[in-house]
Image 1 (cartoon, rainbow, N blue to C red):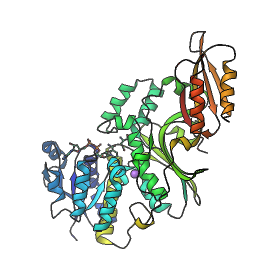
Image 2: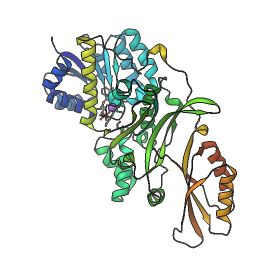
Image 3: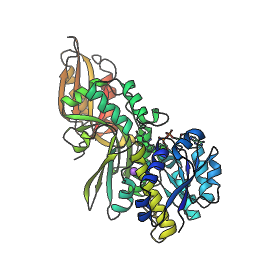
Image 4: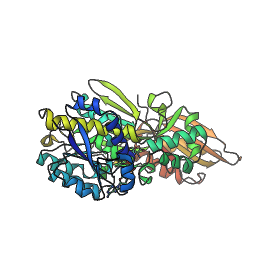
Length: 439
Ligand SMILES: NC(=O)C1=CN([C@@H]2O[C@H](COP(=O)(O)OP(=O)(O)OC[C@H]3O[C@@H](n4cnc5c(N)ncnc54)[C@H](O)[C@@H]3O)[C@@H](O)[C@H]2O)C=CC1
Ligand SMILES: N[C@@H](CC=O)C(=O)O
Ligand code: NA
C-alpha cells in the first residue's frame, strides 16, 4: 500500500518537531500503523524557512487552502494555531472528506462541538491528543483507558509556561519577565503568551478534558479562568512556610449541592500540600490527576510543551487515523468518548457554588482586637480556620495575617472577605487563593 499522504498547515515549533520525528522514526511508525505516513505538502508563511526544515521532495506552498483542497492529501495536520482561520481550514478539510489532526486546544475548546458534528456527518476523524498536556497521552487515557469508570474529577498542571515561570522564580529568584522570555525561547509559550499567563490556555485544555471525562459538550465560555499575573512572591513564600506550594491548577469535577448536580470547571492559582506528588511537578512538566470510581487515583506526568514532546502526540494521532481510516476501520472511538447522541446536559456550576479551602492574607494595622474581629467574621459565615500565621513585613505598625480555612462555599468566603475589607484596621484588599488538598 502506498504511504498515506499528509499535509502540514504550519511548520513552526510543533510542525518542525512533527516533520523531524516522523522522518527519524519512519520505519517503526510504518510498522505500527500498517502503512507508511509521509508528509508530501506543507503550507508555511515563510516558505524559505519551511524548505530549510523539509529539504527537497516536499511541496511547500504559502496558501494553506491549497493543502486542504488538494485531492492527494489524506490527512490534514493543523499546526498554525488561533481559532478563526484554523476553524475555516479544518471545516474545509472535513468537507473535502479529509481526516484532521490538530494540536490546537483553543480551536477544540471553542469550536469543538461544531467541528466534531461536521466530522461525524462526513465520516472522518478529528484527532487532538497534542492539544491537552502535549505529549502525555491523557486524551487516550480518559477516552479509552478509563472507559469502564465513572470519572469523579480531573485536576492538573496543564500549562508548561506558567509552571516553568513559577518554578524558576522560586528556585532561582529570577523575575517574571526574564523567565517568560526563556519560556518563549524554549518554544513553550503560545504565540500570544497572555494566553498562558492569564490561564486561558489551561482553561482550553481543561474544557476539553471535562467534556471527555463527563460526556458534556465543550463549554469554554463557562470556565472560570484566573492566571498567575496577580500572584505575589510574598504569598508563594508564606505558602511554603505553611507547607504548601502554589501551582496554576485546572480542576473539573462532579459536585452535588442543594441546587442539584453540576460540574466544576475552573483554573486558578492553588495551594497544594508540598508533600503531594503533583506539588513537586516543576518546570515545563505537566501532570494530570484523575479520580475514577473503579481504578481510583491515577497520575499522568510528562512533557506538556515543546517541539518533540508535542510531536509525539501529533504522530500518535496520525498513526491512529491511518490505522482506523485505511487499515482497520472497525475500531472507531467517539471524539468525546461518549456516543454523540448520549451527551449529558448537566450544567457547569457557577463559581459561587463551588466548595474548597482558602488561603487568606490580610494586611492590617497591628491593633488590639483585630484578630478577634477576623475570626468572628469567619465564624459568622460558618468558616472554620485550619491554621494562622502572623508576619511583620518589616515595620512595627502593619502586619500580615495569613489564615488557612477548612472547606467552605465560594459565596461564603466572598461575603466574609467583603466584611473583612470593610474593617477600619484592614489595609487594601484581602489576598485569596484557593487551596486543594488533592488527597
Ligand atoms: N509549542 C508547544 O509546546 C505546543 C503547541 N501547541 C499548539 O500547536 C499549535 C502550533 O504551535 P507552535 O508550533 O508552538 O506555534 P509556532 O508559532 O511555532 O508555529 C506556527 C506556524 O504556523 C505558521 N502560520 C501561521 N499562519 C499561517 C498561515 N496562514 N499559513 C501558513 N502558515 C501559517 C507560522 O508562520 C508558524 O511557523 C498551536 O495551536 C499551539 O497552541 C500544542 C501543544 C504544545
Ligand atoms: N503554551 C503551552 C504549550 C502547550 O500546550 C504551555 O505552555 O503549556
Ligand atoms: Na496529550
